[in-house]
Every structure is written in structure tokens, then in C-alpha cells.
Image (cartoon, rainbow, N blue to C red):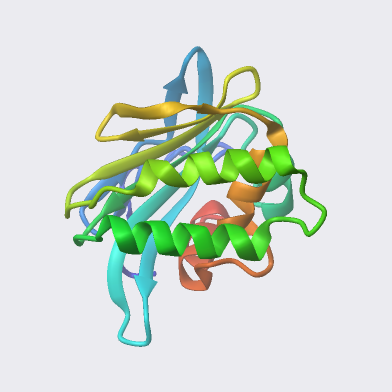
Amino acid sequence: MNRIRIMAVVVLFPALATALTVEGTTYPPTVKLEGHLLRLVGAGLREKTIFKVDVYTMAVYAENRTCDHLKLINADEAKMIRMDFVRHVSGKKMMATMKDNFAKRTPGDASADLKGRIRGFLGRFKHDVKDGTSVRITYLPDKGTTVYIDDKQVGEATQGHDFQKVLWAIWFSRDTCCPNLIEDISETCKGK
């Protein structure tokens, strides 16, 4: 975790009231999302393969900050994932990775409607992502899940709390796609 720096320390229990810097990207302790105040849960670095290739840094924000991953998945409240890419990733690779991640976490009894929303969502990731690109995935209960690439909305919002739970399970379920990233987020959440 030496790649993560805590920028400003203000002790306010139980909320993390510090900015975190990961690989040169600083994540503020709070952000506003359409009138909702979101608090920084934690941040970390996504590394891929046994060679530990850096892919992106990620920060997680929620209205009701918690270090409990199951609560993060299930909370029907405003929240956000922000990924800042530190390398180029092809659209083909992004699509394949997201498709595989959804396939592993979509319930076997998922409705045709949910499966259709997942297919529609995957289309948001068909373009290459360059080093320095910022991707935000926001969730608002009354609006759904929206993707922004470099602050530009990509496609329409994907409706449903059921969809949001499958999406967040990619990172926060027991069989997370990214164990080291989630370990970083958990450690920064707990202030370690």
C-alpha cells in the first residue's frame, strides 16, 4: 500500500476525512453527485496478470460510507466508482473483460430483462481507453447507473437496483475481479 498517500488528515470518526493519492491521482474526501454528498470509501490500484501490470486507479464513494463490501453492493443509495487509467486498454479487451465479469456474477435465475440491460451496458465499453482517461460509474436510485468517460455521458442510464448490484459485485463480492485493488480500498477505508 506504499503507492497510496494520505494527503490531508482530519480525524472524524467514522468517516474518512482525508484525500487519497494513488499513482499521482488525488481523490477528494467528498464529492457532490446531483445534490447528494458522497464520502470517499477508499482507493487503490488495479494490477493485472502475474507481472502486476498497472491498469487503473480506483476510488469508491457512497452516501453512507461503509467498509462492509456487502453493504456497498446492496445499498440502494447514491454512489460512484471512479477509475483513472494509467495505461491504454483496447475497447475489445474492455468489452471482453466486462462481459466475463458480468457472466461470473449474474444470478442464474436472472430475468431476460436484466440480461438485456447488461448487454446494453456492455456497449458503453466498446471504445479504446487511453492512459489518462477517467471513467465514472454513478448510481442514483431514481435515475439508474450512468457511465461518464472524461466527464462525457456515454449512453443512457441503465435502470434498476438489481443491475447495480450485479455491477458492484464485480468489484465487491467475495469472488472479486480484483483482490489487490479491493485490499487497497479496504485498507484505506479502515485508515490503515
